Length: 213
Length: 219
Image (cartoon, rainbow over all chains, first blue to last red; front, top):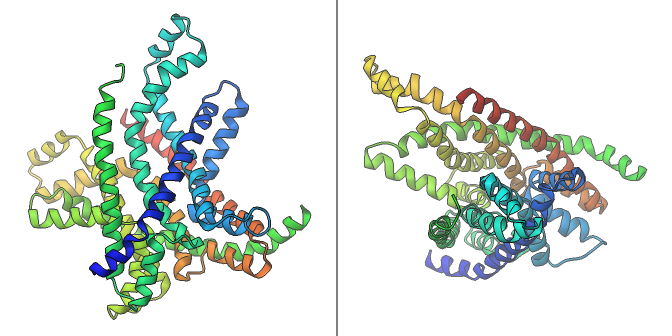
C-alpha cells in the first residue's frame, strides 16, 4: 500500500499544475465575463450568459474531448497537458464569473451610491470600491471551487495526461484489480484538498473583517 | 454546412440510444443514492458516537474522493472481491455512492431548516421520537432540499459521461466511437455536447423555478 502511495505521488505535480493553471486562467477570464454579465446593454449580457450556460452545461470530460480530439484532428493540435489546462481553464472562467457575480450581489447598494456622490467615474468605482470587496467575499467560494476543480481535473487522464488518476489506473492494472490503489488515490486527493480548505477558512475570516457593512 | 447537418441527422439515433443509457444511469444512481443520502444525513446527526463517526467518515471520503476514482474503484475492485456485476451496475453503484455522500449534506441542511418548534410540538402531542422524525421532520426537510437536490441531479447526469472509461455505451462513448470510425471527431463531439445541453439547460430552468417557488412558499 505504501509502495502504491509513493508511486502515485509522482502524479501530484502534474495534477497540481493542471489545477493551478486552469484556476489562474479561470480567475482572469472570469473578470471580463462578470463585467459583461453585469453590463448595461443587452448584447454583452447575452453573450456572457450563453458562454456561462454552455460551459457549465456540458460535462468537463466532453469539453476535453472536443478540444483534444475534435480541434486536435486537423485544426489546432495541443499536447494533452495543454488541452487539459485550456479546457478546464475555460470551464473555470464560467464558474468563477458566477462566483464574482454572487460577490457583487452581496455588496450594499449604498456603496455604489456613495461612490457616485463622491464623483468617482464608473471605472474608478469598480476599481477602488467594488472590486476589492467583491474579491474578499469571493475568497471562500473560490477556494471551495478550487477543491472541486482539483477533483474534476482527474478527467485529464482520459486524454492522456499523466496525473495521479492515470498512474492509479496503471497501478490497478498491474496489481490485477483490487481496491488498494484507488483507496490510496482517494486518500491522496483528500490530503491535497485539506490545505486549501484550511487556507480558505483563515483567509475568509481575515477578509470578512475588511468589508464595509 | 448541409453536409454537417446530414451527418448529424445520421448520428442522432445512435447518440439518442446513448443518451437513454446516460439517463438510466442517472436514474439508477439517484434511486439508490438518495435513500443512502437520507440515511447518512440522519446518522451524521445521531447522538450515538459509533453511528455518527463512521457515517461522517463515509460522507467526507465520498465527497473528498474524485467521482472518477470511486468509479474505477468499484469497477476494478468488485471483481477482485469475488463480486462480478455488469459495467452498468458498477457504474450505477459508484455514482450512487457519490450521490449518497453529496446529498447527505444537502438533506442535512434541509432537515436542520425545519423549525425547532415543529419538533417540540410533535413531542408535546405525545408523538414518539421516531414518529416526529417520520411525519414531521423528514417530509418537510426533504421539501426544503428539493431545489439543491435537483441541482445535484444535473451534476450526476454530467458525471455519467465518466462511465465511458468503464466501457458503458452511453452518450460520450457512442460519440467517440462515431468519431473514431469517421474521423469527424469535432462534428460528432459538438453534437454530443448539444445533446447534453438539451438536457442540462431546460432542467436548470426547472431548478431555478423550484427554488423561486419554494422561496415564496417559505417567505
